[in-house]
Image (cartoon, rainbow, N blue to C red; front, side):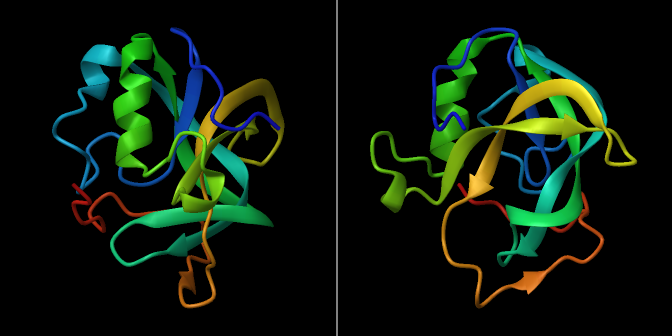
Length: 144
């Protein structure tokens, strides 16, 4: 599994929370519409948790709903990592890790694609699982 590796123009991401198109809490200083393209609804294998105004995905057998995004401007990777509290060179201090995961279709079948995903990197014991694996667009709070 690649963790926090180099991001190139054309790389794919899966956004499942505040970075989904039109999500409440999306960072105003990161223009995802100008820096790439939202492509299609997809899923990931994992479990989704409500972390108090923003979600986090962790390992699990469920399906988490997200949107596939193509990053055309690799310069946006640093502000995205900063927004997600990825601490370069310090995985323990990072709230999220940027990892490559297999992309699945809506039925949970592999698409043959791999994408960067912000994977929650802290204990989830105190948080509630989102059973349907879908973070609502209007559920977010600004983290900036």
